[in-house]
Length: 262
Image (cartoon, rainbow, N blue to C red; front, side, top):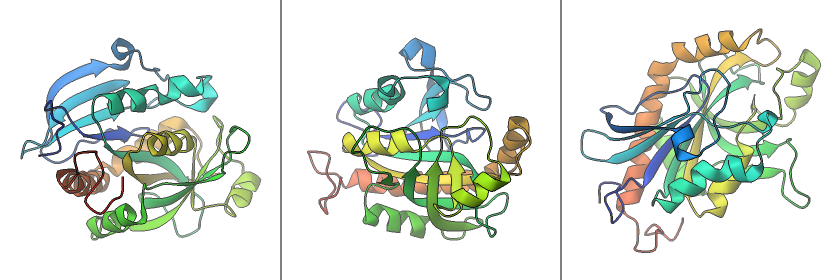
């Protein structure tokens, strides 16, 4: 199947965080489209190109790369923020890798560390009755396979992502408080986990520590740090794309995998 739907379109996408626009190994761009042309929300935050790349890796695996994501603090509605995932799902995309640029909350998470996310702790505004703790991977099986795929790729550990509204960085007092909720902190994550889950997608998330929480002095410094870890992140993205593609190759006719998970 090579990760493509019945019409030959991609079934796998990567949504990239601030300054983390890396391509899987061997990726060849076939087509570029702007978010504006697609009717998707365009963020003004640095490090987000607002561009969707259609392409394939060396063995013909079709992949979409979404360079940029909207943020709650920019004033988008939930429907607008969900639009990219909803549209990709309508094209046949069933597997998604999310990457996030984050601040490290725990003392052992220094710059350049990669965190395979287990949970998203939602401290953003949410509808009444919605849970505050979300799965950051679509199933325990997907999370376990991702952990195996990432062995030997830099400094990788599993952890929890705390989603805050932003756009300001955390004060030392806030960072100490947030440490009780999770390992890394960012300004995205929650809406994507909810949307991917609702759409029945198979998904996994990888965070890159680009600053120590309460120590970031500017977004430019964060982007500089993100650029310095693109090599290790690129290896991680390449391996996770392959892992998800293998699962895509074992899909049943209804989009469920052979072991019954979506």
